[in-house]
Amino acid sequence: MNKVEAEFSNLVKAYRKRHMGKGPSKVITTFCKNWAICEMEGNLSPVEKFIASAADGRQMLRAARTEMVKQIYRDHPPVEMEELLEAKFIELFVDINIEKDLGMSIFVFDVNLEEKFKR
Image 1: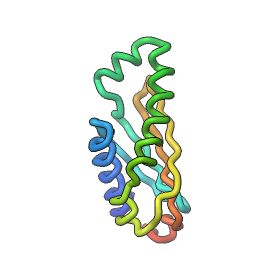
Image 2 (image 1 turned 90 degrees about the vertical axis):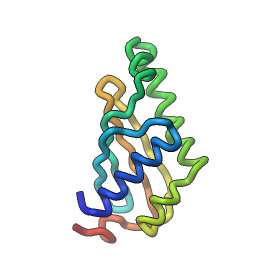
Image 3 (image 1 turned 135 degrees about the vertical axis):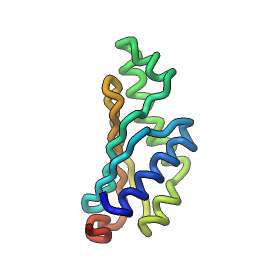
């Protein structure tokens, strides 16, 4: 992870904490073309872990988390991330494995980040 990828990871943690009450405990970011791919560990709050202890709770939690995270970014564009990258945020793809508490977010920007921030 280069310096800008590390800074982006810190912004993701802070953004999620500010807008969701809890951010992931670990984020690893990789730039690939115009994507910032973030692997995240430790996403779930204690209440979410309790909900996930039931099989139907896991599916409900996964659906709610993926859609709610995308909606938060639509309602509150990640200005700090755009400023860091000097790029416009376009789209977010999100998924989470509730059982393992591992998440993946792919941020799409209007600039080739891989080329711009070569290692």
